[in-house]
Amino acid sequence: MKHVVVLTGAGMSAESGLKTFRDENGLWEGHDVMEVATPEGFARNPELVLEFYNQRRRQLLKVEPNSAHYDLAQLENNYKVSIITQNVDDLHERAGSSNVVHLHGELLKARSSFNESDIMDWKTDLVTGDTCSQGYQMRPHIVWFGEAVPMIENAINICTTADILMIIGTSMQVYPAASLMHYVPENTPTFFIDPKPAFESQSNITVIAEPATTGVKKVLKRL
Image 1 (spheres, rainbow, N blue to C red):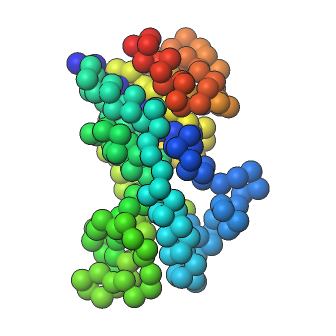
Image 2 (cartoon, helix red, strand yellow):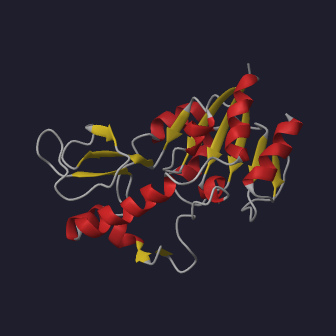
């Protein structure tokens, strides 16, 4: 069974109603990312950071997977499928995908600010005073700027075994995620789906300049 590796970014979930990471002026929902997405920001103002992610979490729980999420889940009927996502939502899992690696963490989980392996499911608001078993404040299970990406080695290993690569809704400009396509075996058939693609079609890369919902359907017809 051929192995399809799928790299997804914010554009994958945009059609479900989730806003992309940040707008063109560098702000995220009106906040400087350095205030709400760094360990230093959390140390300075934990209440602001926790409420920022509480708003994201509430929004996530109100939206549903889109047809592209479901189409990727259906792909498992005929292929081995591994999804490596930069997204922190659970829409791939809700659509039925069984093998999802979250590079940047998961919004519906929280972890101890002392012991990063102390992780628990978390679907309600996270507030100051919510502590782990050792008494330390819980924080969003999100990889912030300046932090290591613990799942990157696992993602690299998956990419080295790809027979087909799909890149959906990401500019592939943010590292280390952007480096992953370089670990795929040379000349692997690659499909790049994004309304504003950062690449042009070439020998083994087919660019589909469309949103995820229509672009994924076109790739599935080719496969």
